[in-house]
Amino acid sequence: MAENMNKSEYLVEVNDLKQYFPVKTGFFSSTPLKAVDGVSFNIKPGETLGLVGESGCGKTTVGRSLLRLYQPTGGEFKFDGELVTDKNIHALRKEMQMVFQDPYSSLNPRMTVEDIIGEPLDVHKLYTTKQDRHDKIMHLMELVGLNAEHATRYAHEFSGGQRQRIGIARALAVDPKFIVCDEPVSALDVSIQAQVINMFEELQEKLGVAYLFIAHDLLVVHHISNRIAVMYLGRIVEIADADELNASPIHPYTLSLLSAVPIPDPNTARASHRIVLEGDVPSPLHMPSGCPFRTRCRYATEQCSAECPSLTDRGNGHMVACWNK
Image 1: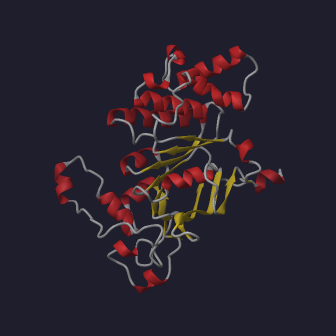
Image 2: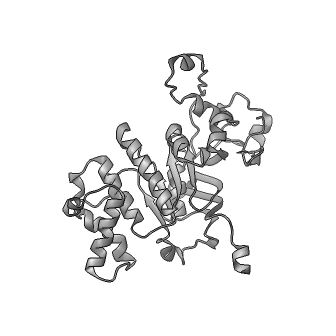
Image 3: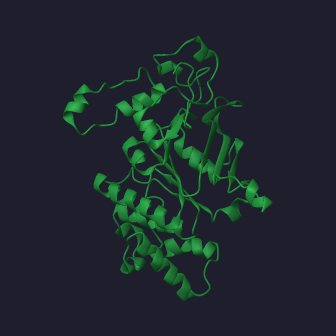
């Protein structure tokens, strides 16, 4: 009873995650490239946290670091109340899976669909007989909208959307509680994107799985997410409920991102004001002092260059890292 009382309400707890990659700058010297620099967030069971930001901001690195595909430089990650380390990551792999961005390169071209989906079952020994294995694979294929006759085919015989369904079935094979979705629809046609997004939502309703949904399309993220975290240059600058963030963004970077979202109504689109950011994204090898966004921010002051703001609660769990907003 006491154990249950101590258990956190969160399935995923990330605190001050850092991921630095050494880059050679001379014969004997190297500089750390700060891909992820002090990221913290939580995800409840069955919840979707959307992670958005422009290309190169460190979104994918966050997902890969959580699953130990990259060895984190610092910070801690708790899964279901248990601290994830190198010693227990293999046992926890069954609970945490990943759907990769590119359905063309994430599937083995020499394996049939049945073997691709069945591989996690083999690794974790999740069946008793060959027939049991076959039945589980057929059930997974049906779950993601694939036909039984697809089982003996190879990945190159499928379209991008079907390949992504195979990747999702593979991730679901071990019945995980948490899936990192790394831009799972960005390589697909727009018409197929909607089908795959709807399938993610249906699977969440049926299985109660939690998602970290990484994307750069705010419309897609708003549709599927309960909460959204906005990332810029290795740091999270704003986290809020999806509807709250869409209706009342606070951080200047979030305002700029939302102003770039296409509006289907031409009258509203003409009346809306597009916020165009000045300058280029700084290199993560040579980060600006203080706030990473200050070099492109119209509100930047001396305090912004002196000290990096931390995330503070502006009410209703709406967290923002900004000195002037």
